[in-house]
Image (cartoon, rainbow, N blue to C red):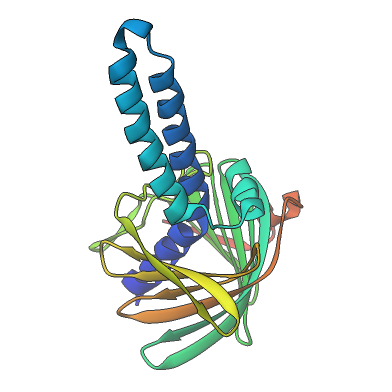
Length: 240
């Protein structure tokens, strides 16, 4: 269960950071194109050829990733945003519903998740993961790279250093329930679907061999509160 829970959060983070990574890729392609066209006249023919190639690659990237909501890309790329979403996750036949408030500020990330049975917060900052359980008033503290048995906790990427997406492939697009979607697939076989209503991102669906999760986006803005990163001083702390 621990392995799948960690895998779930890793895939979730990949899903949420994919748009900002895509923007980084597009910017890189545009810079390469500008450099190619700025070459000297003596290499005009070569520069032209390189520019055409780079332009084609840039167009291809735009075709694959350019449909993602611009406002979503801008906010995610800023490294300072708040996202609220309602998720329904099916794991081994069990359906779990929760609401999550995700806050990112620089290299800090906080996820506050509420369900019928739980009220927990996961804060990632200063190289540590803080698991806050309001029901039991406890805080579990562990380094992001701490090994637990044979399991190693995934290192959470900083917002300024987006997740590497070399193993994420664009599959295609379509329409479902009145929403346009884009489908991506990871090297491990995980499917990620982004659903849009016009330019607005409405939900993200993730399908893995061990679970299926649908995230309905409730809010995405740059309204970041420092309260999200507070660790209760009166809770019992357990350090690993």
